[in-house]
Length: 191
Image (cartoon, rainbow, N blue to C red):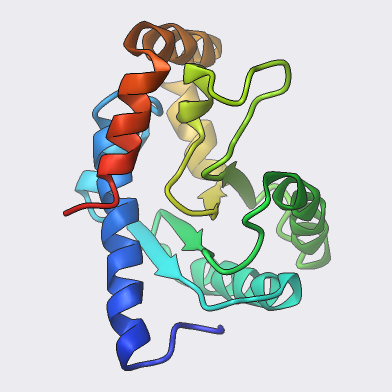
């Protein structure tokens, strides 16, 4: 993995992790955007892993390494691969997700893992760039969220009205408003 080298960048890596951890707590868990996230976060079973990848090829290599790691380490439920140096453009990021799907197929991990997408400029189709509902998938940095399919199936099986989660999130976020959400999102960059 092209991890952040020791020295000055180590402090940067620690801040990346801290920022994403604040985002997880303040936005994902506190707003219950994913009703399955709180337990995994509180049980400390989420790997927050910054990468120094600067190209899509390096990022794919880091993703492959993390998929292999998770395949052999059941004590980690999920990973968030933080990649601030590559795919800052949301369109490019979306195109990259096709390569992610292809990697899962090549590694014969389709149906074992899935990768969810989060990005600072996330925009759902048919929404305005500053729409409040986009904050349900807006992270401080571009992220690849690796999830175990079996965990998703267990969580969904025990949750009533799982199809209503996105609609509930849209309603909740629209009720808060884009200005408040933008300020809260920006607060993730400060301790």
